Amino acid sequence: MLIEPVPAPTVHEPRSRRTLTSEAGKVGGRTPGAGRRLTGDSRQAIHATDSRQAIHATDSRHPDSIHATAPDSRQDPKPVPADPWGRVRDLLVRAEDYQQRLADGRASSQEVLGTQVGCTGARVCQIVKLLTLAPSILERIRTDRTSGVGLGERALRKLAGLPEGKQVVAFEKALAETGTRASRRPHVGTRNAKGFQHLFERARYYKAKMDSGEYRNLAELARAEGITAERIGQILNLLYLAPEIAKVVDVPAEQVPVGLTERDLRRIAIIRDWGRQVEEFASITIKARRGS
Image (cartoon, rainbow, N blue to C red; front, side, top):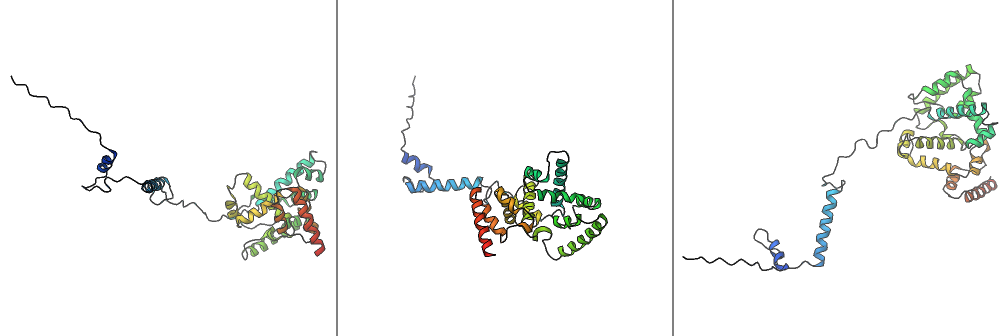
């Protein structure tokens, strides 16, 4: 009986890294770069290419990205007309609060109340005076949000000094004149008023709107108000003035120091230290008095 020999097991010899690199690089019968080691520059180039590909695959801004999305058509919406009585309506809310504080004894006088709320007693008097407007005018202010035509605080204070019957007639006449002017120019009302009091009112109004979350950023608020975000920021910065300075400039126009400009106040407001603000304010007012 013949016994067939058992074949010897095949022994695989270890292949060098050079051989493995050569075989792995074979494509279509060709061996590009067979037998060559990658230099440092080559490895860096490969790593850079891989990094760019990885970034492109995850960066939604890249045109070839799998995550790329179409632009949001909701961005930059058209400007929304401003509420014609928004600021005045806020003042009426404050006026009612001030009147209640004076009535129930939480403040013994307008001066004391001004100290409590962060303004002068004269300013408290101005705001409370708005409540003496005729009931029909107050109702119009509280309900009208779409007409696009309103009056500024100063005009309303003048009306408040008239008898009720004359108030209504003068009110309607002033609204008609304001509507005519508004059709010829974009900005009306208190924006061209003298002094700085109207700017401080606008600053507090803008801050309240931002704090309430009604607007997410200055750009949204600026679109609603019909002015630039830069201008909104300039007005808001006035709230960073030292209390000693605000007490002197947040007053009726005839009481403002002679020669003082809004640009002066904006330059002072960006100084972080209140002590330095007061020194700069004193220097500016002294120079202004000498020059007048």
